[in-house]
Image 1 (cartoon, one colour):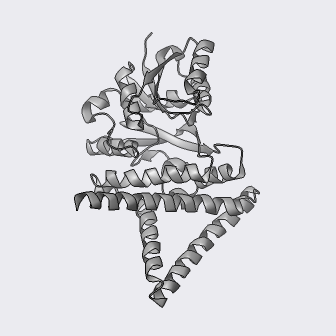
Image 2 (spheres, rainbow, N blue to C red; image 1 turned 180 degrees about the horizontal axis):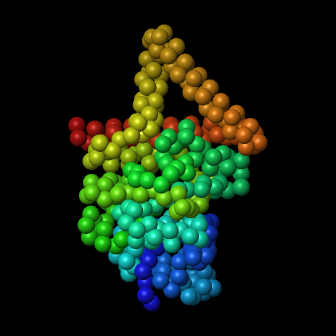
Image 3 (cartoon, rainbow, N blue to C red; image 1 turned 45 degrees about the horizontal axis):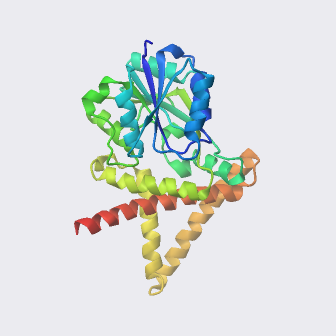
Length: 333
């Protein structure tokens, strides 16, 4: 087989969505005989491997291999898959994703035309379950109040950016800047793209490269996800403080301000009034956003669901960021 593209996928307990990904890969316009799929599985126990095995029997023409990820983390999974990859081009996908049929072809074309060193596209975010809160989370994950200026969630024009979701690059890039950093259990893609840019490369966002991403299905899952994002973001910023963006500074600043005001409120009337004003204004802004989106989409559960989801994202991200700072200070003191 003349393998030119290796699709690498970190995976752990993804039985609910892994078939969506594999079926989407099967529908790619890029020649399947030039593709290989490497799924790095971190000890799934929910039947994920069974689903993959069933798919392999049904579609033996697609080169599909499961490699073990004994560490169990996402960056370790990516590196294990890269070690086994044979393709000239590496395309990362996610077990929660579903690439459009032209995804691989567009990635390869962008790399061949040298638009970027690492290229990626935009997300079409869909609910992770058929519930009102899951749909609210999906809407929040693509709303400016929830994600700020994260362009890959907002369908922008093509151009150079700080980071892209997933990413596609030539295999030789690994020899230049190294693999994914296994000391970062999240934000590993942003850190990788930071090294790309520092080496003189370009991270390119192309809206023609499209994929569906299934958001978390519950507020608890969403809170865990964004806590992890915030926690590991601080660890990455300690190495690259210049990469901090305004949207990333707001949640921890807001959470810290609320904590300080809450502590001072029993002793100072001004602190109490400021605390109540800040909470009231925040709730008012979220409710206004919920009303606007609910009326626009004619889905009135968004009146409550959107504010809940956005608040969960902000508070979890900010708290995780602050906890990461405090835990690091405790270690160094």
